[in-house]
Length: 215
Image (cartoon, rainbow, N blue to C red; front, top):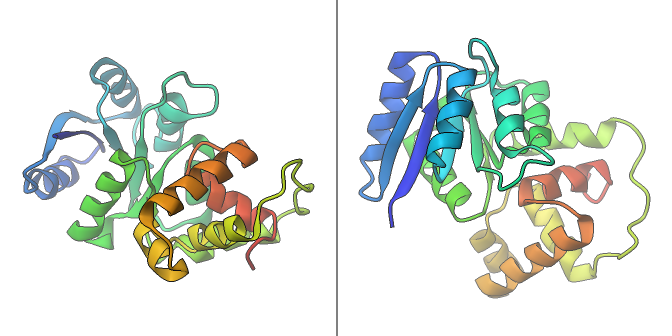
């Protein structure tokens, strides 16, 4: 199976570097490159890539607007967007996750993490750069009151999974940590998303910090 990727960045050298890293993988192909936000949305809607790698700062429309247009709340059949940026700023990460991104990666994270983030997004998982995950999600815990209790409370096991997700653990890491199977983790994550009314594990992580499930 080939993973089809769209690159959106206004710098040709960055796009070229990302293409080299991704197409070094036998199952990756870059189907298009966009130089600004408007072009990114048009190409993504036309080509329906498996994963869109989107920079934050671009001409005409920034990466947050692109993410919101392609995968935000209310978008029918949303695409999977991973935001890739130089800027390690809280408001960018918070904005990207709220706009519907399934991942947030710093450009200096390295080739291996970039490849892992694309694979995670394609698999319906998510990845946020480990260097920013806890710090950037924790700030949600310091803003405003905790959310009201859930109409369908999470079980103790589901809460363990939520806490692991909030700390940036992958499904495999959660399975090893909790001594359960990978399929059981996936089942828990799916059930948690249904109970919380959330679309992906990144939103689950944000909910965990906002709701004081982790501190």
